[in-house]
Image: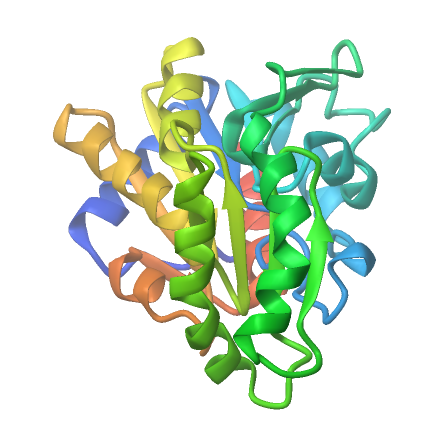
Length: 280
């Protein structure tokens, strides 16, 4: 696909959604996950950075639409730093919904707003090292501190998938004891507060800007609630298109998506094509 050639969604609902975004860009929301969607997946999440063409594509697209929002499990400030979103001409109204929507960063003010942290996160953080030692999950397992959540990564283990499966039950038990939930991802299990997910965050944002069409792109199990939110919006008469940033690690999204693109590079090319289509 050329940089300005729009792909065709494989479903009627997806084609209607994309058509609505192109016909009414000023009433449309473009919402995107960060890791695996705007940024390629890397072994060390701290090294994740937005695809080099992501910022130019977003800056070209944003002035045409009602809102561009990044919806991520990361802390909002970390996503802003790793994405390079601050101070970019064209992205003056970008919104980053971090920690699945519990935090919000607005480019217009360069500030993060958030509620107080859940006390269960500190309790889990204290107990987690001993639980991992007891689990016998083996070397290569590591803990990522996320402020309002804590994540256990298995990507560096000798058998990442076996370690991931072995840790599901004990981590679920630990989370439940402290009023948290476990959010599975691509070789990562995140323990975080309940009550907010990417679907809730997306619905709230779409309603806030009174959008009449929405495009959502994601790559991971944590994006399934956002997919469900778009499906709910479609059932309520708001057209939408579901985009999967393709991966052989997670097939659930690809099976529900209207359009599958080749990772972060494919997402960026789609954004550039959308911007080009709106300039005509």
